[in-house]
Amino acid sequence: MIDNYDVVVIGGGAAGLSGAIALARSLRTVLVIDAGDPRNAPAGHVHNFLTQDGTPPAELYRQGRRELAGYGGQLAEARVESITRDGDRFRVGLGDRLVEARRVLVTTGARDELPDVPGLAERWGRDVLHCPYCHGWEVRGQRVGVLSTSPAAAHQALLFRQLTDRVTVLAHRGPELTAGQRRQFADLGITVADGAVVAVESADDHLTGVRLAGGAAVGLDAVVVAPVCRARAELLAPLGLEPAEFRMGDTLMGTYVAAGPGGSTPVPGLYVAGNIADVQAQVISAAAAGLMAGAAINADLIMTGAAAATRPSGQI
Figure 1 (cartoon, rainbow, N blue to C red):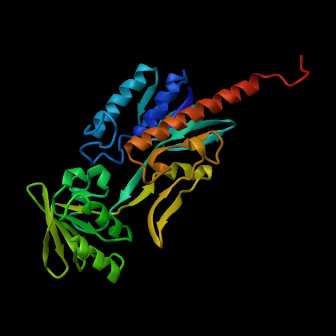
Figure 2 (cartoon, rainbow, N blue to C red; figure 1 turned 30 degrees about the vertical axis):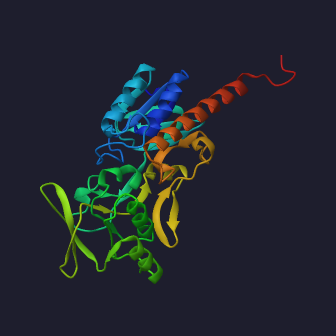
Figure 3 (tube, rainbow, N blue to C red; figure 1 turned 90 degrees about the horizontal axis):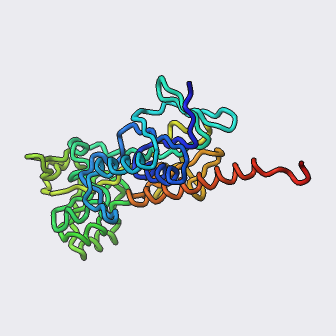
């Protein structure tokens, strides 16, 4: 037996739950399928989310699930293995279970590919950071190193200089700094440590600094990186949707699934929202995108139903 829904939402993070709640409040039958591995799982807290600042990500999603259930929405903890079209409907495979839906909202997010430096991945989301708005307040006034792997490093250094006067650019394997950049850094009190970083060091569960190829140690309290943010879009390839590249010059910064208003895609009835469609989306903007996608899907279903119910002119 195949369970049928108006909408299946794939991904139970901020975008997916927000879209599902909007649909459930419009009396749509909704199933959220969540694999339980959100992008921000390593982070201790959510920030810049009005009234929810400091909430652990898992708690935010727990509250969202409760709200969804309050409006009659359903949740399945599972990993989607396939999405196929069957006429004007979608079939979504979850291992030994198959569900069907009139519309699908994909909010599977993104995965961060970190620089390959020993000891770095273990500190990700704690004192290895990437966003001054997500984590900057927590490292204000501290010793912050910016690991240069792309042109973004110079911009990150300036952003974190707003939060601390102890910023060090770790030249590593990034683009060669221009004389103008070095002069600007010097004027702002930003130091530059030349040479490749061969290890991120820590003690007592705290980052202590980095080790350079020549053996020198740089004492730090946090390291800022620019990961490649790749859309989790593998499920969409059989439907003909491939991620586009987001580049800074010649440097790949991430990938995303291009979407129109409300998250619509070239596949009729298939929508996307959150980090899968926007590499720069924070939790609050992902939630907003999910809400807009939910509203767009509801309007789509309403117009489709109205068109089907309207008799052609002259028909008795």
